[in-house]
Image (cartoon, rainbow over all chains, first blue to last red; front, side, top):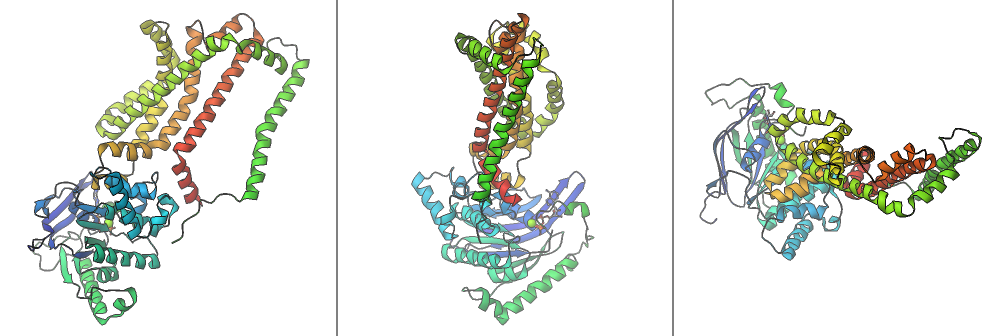
Length: 285
Length: 271
Ligand SMILES: Nc1ncnc2c1ncn2[C@@H]1O[C@H](COP(=O)(O)OP(=O)(O)OP(=O)(O)O)[C@@H](O)[C@H]1O
Ligand SMILES: [Mg+2]
């Protein structure tokens, strides 16, 4: 999109879950735009509605009000231009299919020749370094490898936007660093626009070109921060840069502020709802 | 990033294990038959027979025209009944399991129908369908379908929400969603239902023939009993047992194939 039109536009997004025990306002009012080719990180405290936001972006949830626009047209359902990597890799891969079968499944309804489909699968598996595990089943792989399969499945789908929900929350530190570099590499070499949700501040600064800090619920955008680190990053030198430290401190402060409640400038000071019964519905941790 | 192995037992342990299993599988029956033989030479009860007499009766009764006249039709009806139960049970189970309102309306009704002992349907089925093959198959299905139906409903209902969301987000077609998500996800439960259905179907096959038939395994056994052909009667019971064992073995082979991923996954998570 050379005309400078945003790829993704979110305007006054609000989402209220109506459950049996009353209403839960997961997202208060979120607006932002995203340019084509961008790698945008979204950070926010636990339970602030990050997963809800992603599901609204991906067309899996209908917003209560507000607008999500993809390439100029409103998102009303799952779009072929988006691929999602879910927080729970163990529950998003199908254990009865092989690695190859999992990556290939979403391509079956695309009008591709068998050879072309096979090429896309091979290419995606190669990109995540799992070509030799193609015939294994997901449960025969480690957690990090399973998440690579989920990433390969999303990449093979050839989306315009890759949406990732805390994909590395459940893997060990070393694997996590490898996977972060994989995401950056995919973004650099393939130019896939990426929305990456995390609750890890370092991760958001290391990965992103831009970091969106969300407040506690009712969720707003607390801060929209450009990450002016060089595009060539690596785990050791980038994380040692003074600028990196400054940026992460900045994000950290904002998160702390976010945790204390809604942005002070907002007029209607809604009480911070503890929502104990709602908490147990969150996935993951 | 190492692949987790499938934790098989080491070869030496495996050898010992196999030997042990064979010993138990063969040793105990041999012992039982031996005791039975000794006991039968002393017993004077004419309604109980020894293994020798039984084997002779078995050979004379079932190896010959009776096989085609009585055994094959019975087995044929049993298999038709079983396959019909699986087809109908799984199809209805998927539909009911996928639609919550339907499930809530039908659940009490299903519980009621399941609670009716199927043999009491035989007189009804006789009135409606006459003494036909169809009637016997209907009786078999009326009993064997329930474990399959209820297990399928439960399995389909319990399909993981994240797996479903994955399917929606990648716009996986309805057809693929059925064959590559919902049915495989429910397959462990479906298999449990089919296993339960096997024994129910065998029972109903025999009972339906005892009531109303002029041929078939159940009819033969009842006929021998009425005519005091005691050894022949016992041989029929032996044949029934053998059919049951063959069914269970065939089912076991199919199940291991279909649920290979499931057993593999369980083995890994246990390790
Ligand atoms: N289906 C639902 N029904 C009702 N409430 C829900 C539902 N899903 C999420 N919520 C509530 O909405 C809020 C936001 O949840 P969400 O999962 O989006 O948060 P999150 O930022 O992704 O959390 P985490 O960091 O734990 O992943 C939480 O209070 C949660 O309990
Ligand atoms: Mg979440």
